[in-house]
Amino acid sequence: MQVTFVVTHLLGTGHLARALTLGRAFATAGDTVTVISGGRPVPHFDTTGVTLLQLPALRSDGTDFSNLLTDDNVTADAAYLEARMAALLAHVQASPPDVLITELFPFGRRTLKHEFQALLSAVKALPSPPLILSSIRDILAPPSKPEKVAFADDLIGGAYDGVLVHADPQVVALQDCWPVSAALRDKLHYTGFVAPAPVPRSTDTTNDIIVSAGGGTVGDTLFHAALEAAQRAPDRHWHLLVGGDAERRNALSRVAPPNVTIEGPRPDFRTLLTQAQVSISMCGYNTALDVLQTGVRAVLVPFDDGGEVEQTLRAKALSKLRGMSVIRQSDLSGDALLHAIATAAHGPDRPRRTHGMNGAARTVDIVHHLHRRRMHDD
Image 1 (spheres, one colour):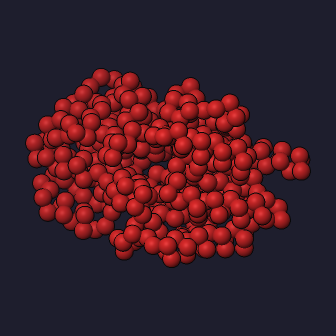
Image 2: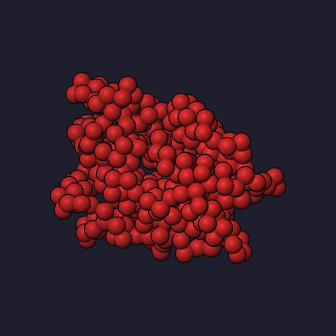
Image 3: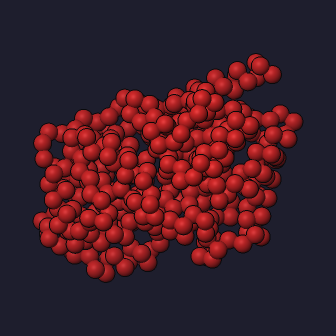
């Protein structure tokens, strides 16, 4: 079975990370998998068993998702967007999918709606149209206008066979952040959380404080607060994993005290967490699962620029667990971080979470079942 994912990450890299985790699970099950990525390349991501097709890349202008930039840092013009669309449509016509999965759309990525709608029209016109599914994380940005809900409902009702919700409804349900109509509810399939296979707990423990902000270019406020805290706590080693280009890391290195190591994101990030004393990070979907799976004590600084609320809602849910501390970005400082570290480090360890983390395998089972049922009905 040919399974094709279409994903464009614009700010962070979590959407692509989740799509690749799902893609590897389908490949393990014997499917042929293509992930078509429209965001910036992320070379350290694991593409084992997956064909990764890179479209002309886009990224957002910070949290302004209405202004899409190219790798040359200029606004993408009509010709650039047409080239992306042409490459996307050419691929699905040359390698028709049996299953097409769009990441986030139509619940998000509305700035790319013409591209996604052209894709849906193209695959519907194939001699054997695919099973079409939307793939969404646990918490969506609540819609700011009723028109956004109507847009998603209309497309799901008219073009999609189902919606894969990568969450445990006992922890967080879609209706907690998005209005769910009766028609939409009938198309929801909860998969559990999509996490990579757990890593063994390392015996090589350190006193490191790991500071990360995903693979994108956000997190400067967090990193500068960490450098300030490191100056006040010279007896600890601070390990900053900084996304973006080398110049961004060089700028931080020039003002870092000697007890700080700065490097780019690493594929063994989760192993580092099992060795660390405390993790300091934002609270994106994948990072939250890394914290839960490794059991590391954590300080969460949810990203809330531009009115973003997704990470704040997730951090609020996690703050009820042992070994967790939460700081708002507006309250960040070196002293605030040191206080939060002390809070997170206090008390008994938190057990690693294992329940409900097999969302990738569960997704494969659900999609295979839906595809078999579709073939039987046809």
